[in-house]
Image (cartoon, rainbow, N blue to C red):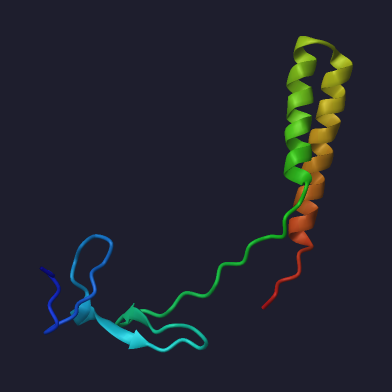
Length: 101
């Protein structure tokens, strides 16, 4: 036996609230119709940075810096140099990124 009702279809939010009275059908180009709460607009896509190796280089630098505390000052200096190089490279990439808008 089916529990569905053909008389009235309602949308419910993830919290379980009925949102059928507060929604309107929004047509999107090239995709399925979406429900948007009245007074709201569909958010623009979030811009993400391009993948980079600088976080991995920074992690290697921190690892060498901490390993050098246990073993040798020279390893700590190499780790510090890697950390500073990665920090400058990562920030430089973020500052020189071209916006796609």
